[in-house]
Length: 292
Image 1 (spheres, helix red, strand yellow):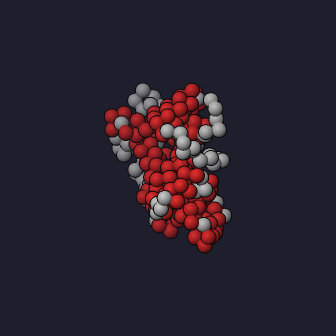
Image 2 (cartoon, one colour; image 1 turned 90 degrees about the vertical axis):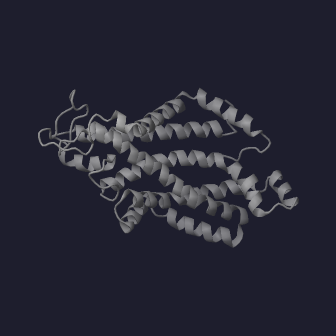
Image 3 (tube, rainbow, N blue to C red; image 1 turned 30 degrees about the vertical axis):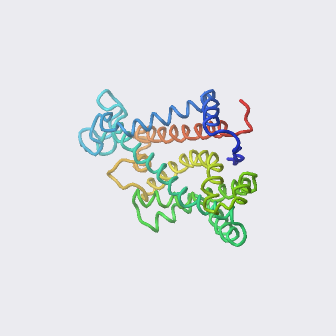
């Protein structure tokens, strides 16, 4: 995803926000993405009220039952209701995506600000370390870190967040390089403002739009990564429901009970699609080059 140019400082924030929201509302694909994301968020929040069964309750009389009025999406190899497990599994997937990206922002943005603003040896050291991490495929790095830390959802989120941080370092650095020579930054420097004040009041607010877009898209990547780690046994541990661990179990019953894999796989597809559409819509809405 290409980075956005810095927003103009002369545009009043309220007017800029209203214009961006108006452009976003006119984008029907973006609104569809927002609707999908909100649907899964509500599903996760209201899980105790939506689930029709206890997601951990086993029953040897209902093993691998096909979808029916009693079990809307069927049951798994232990007789547990798949619909209820999927509803609770949404919590793990969304939390993994959001927390992982928050970790990536907290780790990556300060380094990117320092590299872009101060330059020199600071930029060289941070950039070389970032390039070294970016040379390792994202999922491979996440798997290695998760295996080192140990299997759990918390460790998986840390591993995904650290693995995604280099993207935010590079994006933030590029945006700061475009902003730091603007007239309003030079004026603040001439008036004697400290570097910390310039970064906090003038630089960081103007690099936020592309970071918001990148964060939204990275949430989708983090959800896939969490599902992959859970599939490999490095994420949320059974019997707690997770879409990735449900797929791991379902791979052994592809012919006997295909619904065990179809529904969790479809949920991952839809939520990732929703965040990608939302991210594309935010990119278009926050891009000052877009006139519509």
